[in-house]
Image (cartoon, rainbow, N blue to C red; front, side):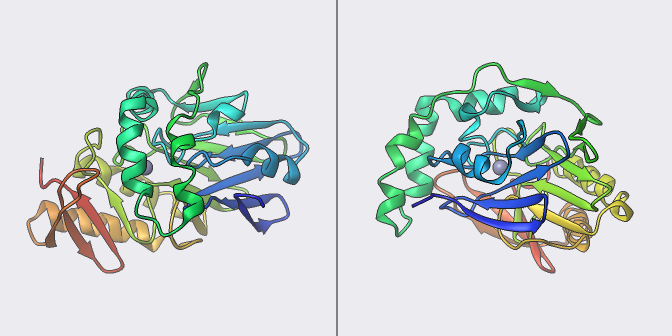
Length: 267
Ligand SMILES: [Zn+2]
């Protein structure tokens, strides 16, 4: 049985879901295909991708977290923003993985998932990654995806924009639930807000947002809600509660309309 479920978005775009509901996207052009993120690292992603396209496949990571880069080692050409180097180093470190992965998966009510924890901890590191920057274009032949730098969740978080097909792939920068800005390497609230303002300024170029988790697809008004939430936190007016988090560190949760931002206060 495959570890992955595949959902067709259109004839040349698929959402691939791993057992802990992390989403990856396979985007195919006339000459090649781009795999956006590689999930937690459950076995068989390469086989699933091969069942969908026979074109050469390149990977782009929206950021360096271990639930987005887990199967990078199965692919030859893997790209990420250079600002993610330290995040990748931390998330690929064995000591870190030994703590974080059981912390994230140990309480999931699935024997199958829990039995994979040791394998996931010991995933081989992808060596020779390639670095891309803001504005880089992945030209797949008749289909182009542009790198949009959206620092906040991590320093080198990116979104991928397919203007022709009006799709934005947002990683962990925008989703229907909440964005985590309380991690050691997260950027300040105002930097994240600037990223959202930049995306919102591009909203006439896409209709749907395809995030790394939760509801999918989502509309561009979510971006405005994140801006509104950040504004309220910065002005001290946000509805805020304490959020104990043993795995990633205690934080504050501020909510606004449909979403929330997890943060450490105004820094
Ligand atoms: Zn993340």
